[in-house]
Image 1 (cartoon, helix red, strand yellow):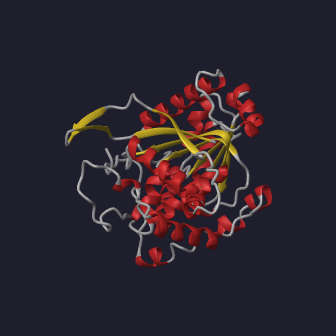
Image 2 (cartoon, helix red, strand yellow; image 1 turned 90 degrees about the horizontal axis):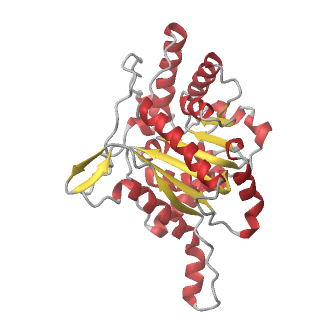
Image 3 (cartoon, rainbow, N blue to C red; image 1 turned 120 degrees about the vertical axis):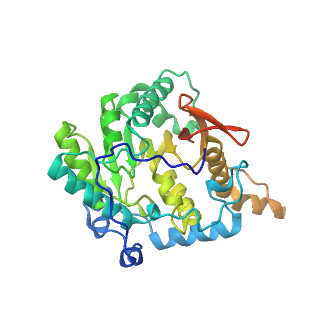
Length: 340
């Protein structure tokens, strides 16, 4: 169910210190490494970050967008401050991964596995099966004919798809995907400490082909498109920031620019149910079409609506469920969407 958070699986992992007030004040000063990292030369930068934030704020005020945690009908309206958390600040994660990197160097510990190793393994194996179904044509592709070339590439060589894990943390999900047969793997995180840890673990465990880059999904410098994008807990953390609703809009704008036409987006969340994620995607699709709808309402000319940018494909059905308040839910939701 929404709002339930899982404890980290590794009890031996050191706990991060709470952020100080100076940490929180400096949160908006994104990692210097994200601006100077080699991704600029590798992928280029085409986005105006200040304009992206302004566009998201304007869309929020016009569309009265609600965060996913507001969609559930089986709980009382949450206090805005109650859903904010230290986990929404970069300073928390910088401190967390600084401690975990030290712990790895001193004791060889991989650190915390958010949602647990079992969930991570389910996500990797289920994603492999889903991609296989697409490659064999068992799931229909609802994509414009103009995108047939990229869709054909997906169908012919599913495990050569380019894969991006946003908010990769220690990178262990990418290692699991590599075990499932994926080979073109990239992980990004806005915490330089996380990237250092992920690289160290991948090198130790023999996954030297995985690429790791410092990059903030909300202010991404990537201009490459990926055929599979995975998110395990990143949208959750973004939603816990005090500006969560605005940042979630920025998230969807960025994600839509990174998923190739016909490609898949797989989100794993412990703060949103499957239905809440689907509703959030519907809200994004509607917001994207809102300018044309306003033009059509004036009667000046006929409006040709764009098809929804993302459509729901499937979700993991094997997670344990429980009953609460007359509704059945699970502690974790993994949902797949296809980009048009």
